[in-house]
View 1 (cartoon, rainbow, N blue to C red):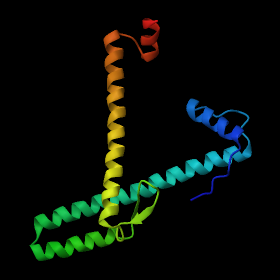
View 2 (cartoon, rainbow, N blue to C red):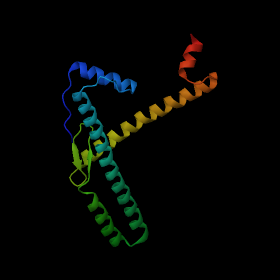
View 3 (cartoon, rainbow, N blue to C red):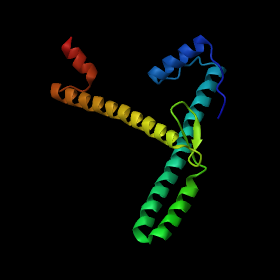
View 4 (cartoon, rainbow, N blue to C red):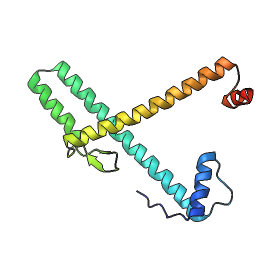
Length: 154
C-alpha cells in the first residue's frame, strides 16, 4: 500500500471540491497530486486484489460443484479439499479494514464478511432503485433530465 501524504485543510477542501465536480483544478500542488495518485493507486490495487480473489473463489465454487456432481463421495471430498487449499492464502477485508486469509478466518469472521457484503448489496440496490425512479420520473414528465423536472416545477 502506498503511503498517502497528510493534507492541510486547504488541500483537503480542494480535493473535496475536485472529487465533487470530477474536475482537476489547474493550481494543484505536488503534495495534493501525490495524495490523489496514492489514493487512486491504492484503490485500484485493492480492486485488482479483490478481482484475483473473486476469480479464485469462483473457481473453487465451480470445482466443488463439479466434483460433487461427477465423482464418488470420497473422491469428491478429496477434490473439494484441494480446491479449498488453493484459497487458503487468499484474503478478504472485514468491515473494520482488517485483512483475513480464507485459511485462518473464523466462522465469526466469515459471518462478519457476509453481513458486510449484504450491507453493500443493500446500498447498491437502494442506488439502483433511485436511478430507476429517476428514469420513471423523467419519462413520465417527458423531459431530458432531473434538472428539467425541477425547472418545470419552479
